Length: 322
Image 1 (cartoon, helix red, strand yellow):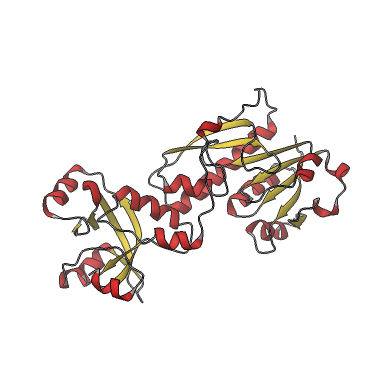
Image 2 (cartoon, rainbow, N blue to C red):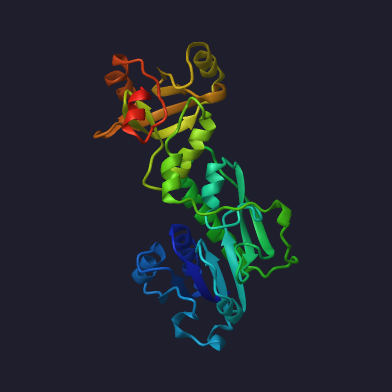
């Protein structure tokens, strides 16, 4: 049954949820943070009423006008004012983690960074003056496939958020809301641009293949790429995966030190910390286009035996790293 919904969202995760609500025929009022967000552009494209976020009631509405509305928050990143929450019949948050794990503005980013193989989509009550601490109304487990890139996980999660919310709205809650176990709560603060820049400088000598792979999936959500220093140049690793083949592990452990690599079956196999192996299939050198592993090895590797090292910020350290 269609509802009147007051929707708060900003990014492409939010847009996926909003798109599903529109397809279900709900009557929508949407609030977003600026005229530049994906949600704002989606609303304008489909002639949906949209307002820019302030601390006041949206659309200049009076409180009684919103009493029949269900409030929905999806990847908004700011606290909803208490007077807005109290104005609606109900206010829920559709959240991409297994609450109370990863409470905060960037749950999916922390799911990727920590290499979680299972997460969840959680529907919880929205409370004033606090993030993600309301009672849990519904929670659906969500496996995170290891063969997906960060952007694929983002899209996949958004689709599951949309389906979980739609099922919740279409089916009245029959279970008692469940209080969160605060002792299990973990924060998921926003990962800032300067933090991403530091994270994307990876080091096979000190990091495992899984750690580098997790960082690669995280930075895939941004304009950055993980990078190493090679032959005094910054080499971006565009497509990476963790190599599980025991025969490759045996070869690498027998002949290579962390940071060194071999070319096998179309893949650059990089020895990493703790005996792990990272597979690289695409990379980018400065002032170059994307190179396949085969082309990189054919055109560049035979001229030098230099290993992959961490990228350093100072030019002096860059010279030393080779």
